[in-house]
Every structure is written in C-alpha cells, then in structure tokens.
Length: 374
Image 1 (cartoon, one colour):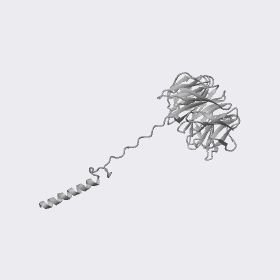
Image 2 (cartoon, one colour):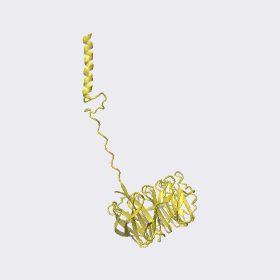
Image 3 (cartoon, rainbow, N blue to C red):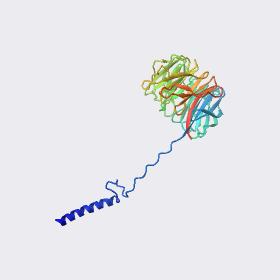
Image 4 (cartoon, rainbow, N blue to C red):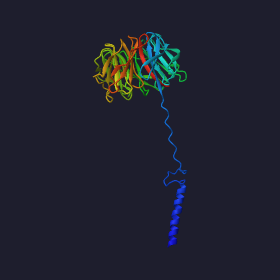
C-alpha cells in the first residue's frame, strides 16, 4: 500500500515538473511565451503633426494676393504679396497643398501659382484663359477638376488639373448657365455643384469626367449675393440683398427645394459662411457694415433668428473664414482695406473684436485659410 502511494505521488511530481518546464520555468498560466520573458512594450504613438496656417486675401483693387501667417495667438503677420490679375477676388488652394489659383474678372483668365507649404508663399504664376468676367474658381475635392464662373458671359469654364504640375487644361467649351453666375460651391462628396445666378440658385451633377449637368434651377424672391453649403451636404443657404437668408434642402440626387426665407433683421446681406461644425452661420451685411452670427439647428437646418450678436466690421464687408482651431474668425473689409480678427465664443459662436484690423491692399474681397504641416 505504501509503495502504491509512493508511485502515485511520484507520478504527480513528474507531471508538475513537465508542466513547469513547458512554461520555461515560469508559473502555470504564464501565457505560453515559452521563454517566460515579459511581453514587448507597446510602440510609442507617432508624434503629433504640428500645423502652420496661412490666410490668403485676394485684393480686387490692387490685383494682388496678400499672404498672412496665422500665429498661435490668432494674430495675422504679413509674409508676402504676389501679383495676380485684374479683378482677383478669391484664392482656391488645391487639395494637395501644392498649388493655388485665382480667377481674374478684369483679365478674363485664371492665375495658377506653385505653393510652398513650408512658408505659405506663392510663385511661378501662369495664366490660363477663362470666360468674360471670370468671377470665382473652385477645385473639385478629388483635385482633378476646376470650375470657374464667368459673370459677364453667363458660363462656367471647366478644366482638368495635371496632378504633377497643377496646370489647367480646358475641358471642352464653356457651359451656358443662368445669367451672371457668381458663387459656386461643391458638395463634400464631389457629386454636385451649386451656382448662384441672378435669378436664384442652380444645382448640377458632376460626372466622372468632370462634366456638369443641370439638375434644378430655383428662382429666389430677391437678388442673391452669396451661397454656402452646410457641412452635412443636406442644406444650402442663400444670402440675399433684401435682408433674408433662404435655406434650400438638397435631396439625394442633388435637386434643390426652397424653404421659407428667414428674415435676419439686416439689410444687404453680402456673404454667408457656415463654420466647419455646421452649428453657426455668419452673415456680413452691407446695410450696417457688420457680421451677424446665427445658430443653426443641425437636424432641420433652421436658423436661430435671435442672433448670437452682431459686430461692426469695416466699410463694405467682404468675406469670412474660420481659423484652424475655431477660436478666431477673419473677415475682409473691401471699403476699409483691412482684415479684422474676431475671437469666437465657443458655446454660441458670438464674436468679439480681437486687436485692431490689419492693413490689407486696395479692396480686399475673398479670404481663404489653409493649414500645412510645419
């Protein structure tokens, strides 16, 4: 009996020894590493990309583009001035951050520049013909196409873009559109374009080739000065000279339908800008040279007609753009030849003047903000 018990406990001891050896001398349940070593430490996260932002201001009167560096404090520091064409109004930056463009209404052409992301500077200007009164240029999200509204001959010029050089190549004859086209915006998916014309707003499909096809034309009750697209792509807003902002719904096929205009309490709505989160709409007014902020209801797109406040700008306010952090808003004064900076109250979007307006050149109109890795 004692011998049997001795043999039994001996077998148990051998089994335990074998298990420990299989774990490299470690404990049972050591994780099967074989060597008993600690698992390798997780790789450190990649370093955060530090960005530098620049503001590009097109000055219609001096035929130039003023470039400002945006400091971490929100202040603007002028870094360069480049010559554009007569009637330059707006700078469009290519998605690759390697090229920039402006349409020149007096010269009936488009200027292309090489862009240095390290310094924000523009160089190597090349001009390409457009239609009469070339008003504004937009780049397709793919970076493959560009579209220019030609105000005086009521057409849109379409171009292919060379990925290596940024050069524009006309894509067929200019497309006739409604009278006096001005603003043009492209939805985030790249499937639709929306154009402000004298009678209202038109929507177009964008084919894989870049060709435009008319979807709907919606007449408005008063001349429209500007349009803006909600980040969701579901609503388009039209700012009119009679002090209204109309919300237009966009269906899945790009068709527009009008919703009752909102009376904003101002006169001569000039430009409208929807900040990137879609929570606030900013409207510049010629009647009292101000910017008003309105909350936007995200589901319905309705405007809160009790504005989050209106602040004075300079004479003949131009366009508006949000800084990279959302803490500051920048606006041009065409009549005052300045760019103003406003601090943004994050909860409501209300604005407070930040510092003194920065001198620009004669008749600054469009402002574009772009950010590049440092």
